[in-house]
Image 1 (cartoon, rainbow, N blue to C red):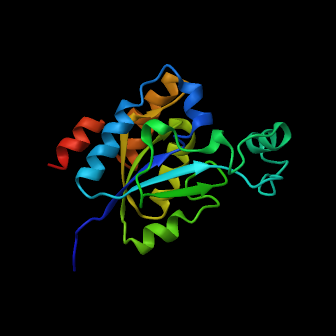
Image 2 (spheres, helix red, strand yellow):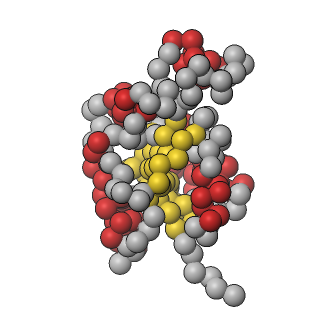
Image 3 (cartoon, rainbow, N blue to C red):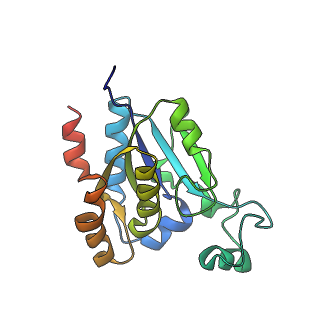
Length: 186
């Protein structure tokens, strides 16, 4: 039986409307992670959150997403939901649309990963306490091996980011910097 692991790098919620809230932050770690993955033939899969016109996916009971439906924005074709130019997908790289916080919720990500025979996920994204946390938990429950690139995760609250990467994530994932991860691929 083969024990070869097939990994994919998930670049989550690096879309214009979310990146713009983190204007002071440098996207260089994300760029370096994407570059390392491409150099080592690790598929890069982009995940973005977006809704259909009219927001049929949003429930009034969902505190976060019902506000989006109320005030507008974040539909599939809007500029806010497009992948940020600094981490633009190359031709052939997949972009998955999700409808909730986790990369798996309302998306075809799991189908794609199964078809590609991926069993290991490298997680990056904004925000650490949002998409990264939700995706990590769900992916762990789905038995994926996990690595979180701590410096390719951003959160509006630095203390929440610190607690997650230092205390919570290590229970279910390897946590390393982009540099450490890229070095491990050599």
